[in-house]
Amino acid sequence: MAVTDVHSAADRLLTLVADVDDAAARADSGLPGWSRGHVITHIANFSEAMTRQVEEALQGRLVEVYDGGRPARDAAIEAGADRSAADLKSHLTQAVTALLTSWDKVSPTDWPLPILHRNSNLSAGLQATWRELTIHTTDLDLGVTAASWSEDFCTHLLDFLRPRTPDNTHLILQSPTVTWENGTGEEIRLVGALTDLTAWYAGRQAPGPITGDPVPDLLPWP
Image (cartoon, rainbow, N blue to C red):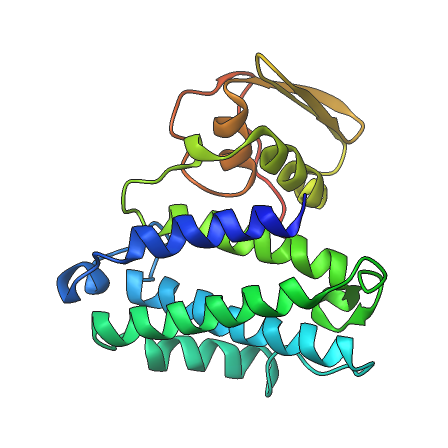
């Protein structure tokens, strides 16, 4: 992947959100217990947090992702979720635009620089940004589904989520274009479109059917 993939994901997100009004912002998202306002607030807050990761890394410094950790992150989402649609969209646009500007500053030799987000580096942080923007665009439940995910994104997400495969399970996800395998043990083969299989593995609603063996319970996100 490249910075251009993140720009494309951001453009898709901001275009989708542009017409959201107050009623739509209050409506349920695709995530249980979260309105669209929750999702928009989370993406904006994540973008601000990742911008800080990038800017500090480029100066040779490490900084916490969210001041106050996970409790402060969750509280900020709740506090911001019920804002007007205009405020939500303004916050999202400013935060995402600033993050893109920061990613554009990263030179080829900067990508190994460490960050505290997942105790990784700028390269992994760019991938995390790609995941957050792409997945949460579908979570908004505004007509964009996982069927829009590219093959590159699907294979990246499947590999990132390998720890979700249950113990003692050899999971085979078979699509017309890609066969993906993980784990050892009892074979479970699921068949469907790559986007459907990836959505299921990511804990999202699959747009289309999945057939084959009984679907296993997955482990939590890594």
